[in-house]
Structure formats: C-alpha cells, structure tokens
Length: 290
Image (cartoon, rainbow, N blue to C red):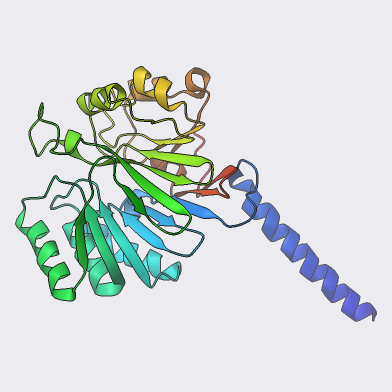
C-alpha cells in the first residue's frame, strides 16, 4: 500500500511539474472547452500560419519558401496532420515550392487564393500539380465567407472585387485581408498590404474590430497606422518576421500606446494563440526578453 502511494505521489508531482512548465510559457487565462489554435511559425519553419480548428481541420496560410519546406513538412507531421487546406494570400514564386511539398506529403483538399494570380512559372506549376491531383483551386473575394470548419469562419475583407484599381494588379495591396472568427473572438490578418491598402480598408467601412491583429508583413514604418489601430482595437498584436521590425512600427505598437500585448516571431520564436471562443491565451517558444 505504501509503495503504491509513493508511486501515485511521484506521478502527481510529474503532472504538476508539466503543467507548471506549460503555464510558464503562456500569457492569458487557460481556455476551456473546444479549442481553436492558430500557430505563427518562426522563420526556420517558413514563417507561415497553421490554423487548427476544434474539429481537427487544418489550414496552412502562406507556407513559406523552398528552403524551409522540409522543416515545415516535418513540423506538420509532428502535429499528426494528415489532411489540410492551403490559403495563399499573395501568390508568388516564393511560396510555390512549399505548396508543391505540401501536395506531395499530405492530402490537400483545396487551395484558396484571391483574384490576384501569380504569374511566375513556379506558381503555374502549382496550379498544374493541383489539377493533376484533382485538388480544388478556388478564388475567394471580398465579402465572401469561407467555412474552415463547422465552428470557424474566414471572412474576406479586401481587396475589393476586381482588385484595387489605384495600384498595379501585382501590388502587395491586392493581397488578401481577412478575419477569422471563432465564438466571440476575431483575428484580423492583413497579409502584405502597405499604407495604401490600409487606407482603403479603413475607408471601406468593413468591420475590422478584432481581438488579435496580425500586422502587415511589409513591416514598413507606416504599417499598422494609428487609423487602423483605432478601428481594430486589438488586445494582442503579432508580427511575423525573421528580422527586427522597423523602430517606428515598434514604438507605435508599444503596449503603453495601444493597450495590446505585442508578440514577435523574431524574438518569441513560434507563437501559438489558443481560444475557446471566449478567452485567448498566447503560448510562446521563447519569452522574448532582451
């Protein structure tokens, strides 16, 4: 009896130790119930985004460059991914190789992109490979809502149907901007838009208010303008970058100015945001302190 009690105490201590270790990298209350998990990968994994719904449906957003595609596939295998969707916000030769790697390694149900179509030969190969494998290729446009699962929606906000006419059709300002909604929580993805795309988004009257703002990847000094921040009113901001972001941008996103916690893949490594639709917690690979 005493031996059995000792074993139980050891197991309990291990469980408590594991729990404390998990919490030490977590910011925010522990979510309860079915969980949405959005993971922002560090640069060595491609810097893309993985959305995992409570129904275990996976969507990979902008999977990254050719040099990181093997690491991305390995990471997804570690997450026990078998089937996935792909969303490309700005089709270029950069993310073509990773798309092809995902089609080779997993069952891809559909590849979604906006009206802006990549013109590179490598992107045309992605389209050809998808057609050969019978994978659905679809364009999603502003004001369209996509069901990522029964509980999770993606609503496209920009560019307008027919693309922004004030910029070239290949401009970053014609990359997809969308909001993911789960329960009462909203996550705004601004892709690679510049100040022109932000200005259009603000003037469009779209409901951009969100709990989490994923800052434009352009990372220029005017990204995440005060006008956009005042409309979004985020509790958390995320910057996905392999380099230190622009100083003016960091000053503007300072928690003292916005009231929002800022997380960066260049400092925090891979970042996961988990939510039960009522609360949000952020789990980081590194604490990011200097």
